[in-house]
Image (cartoon, rainbow, N blue to C red):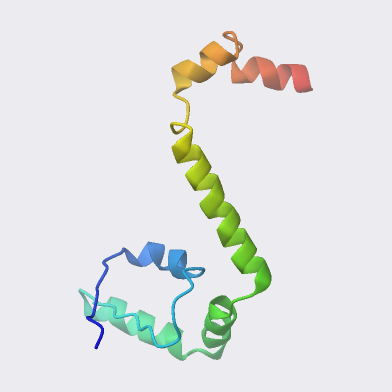
Length: 107
């Protein structure tokens, strides 16, 4: 029997699980710290519109798999190359030209 593993994420980040490729028997347990939040969530889950949106979200498609894989490759590439530039490094690369000056030249 597999052991149960738990993760803790803020409610605002639940959408991040959309393309997590979770097995069909995975469950999500949510703890509410107040009655009002629980009632709002329960009401939203019972609405037909929300249920359909949830079903659409959880359906895996070839496109969602490709998008997820692209994000994973981009993140791995960024990490392998040393991460993002600092503002000072960007300014050095741009030879001191400001964002505003670039915008002015584009117009």
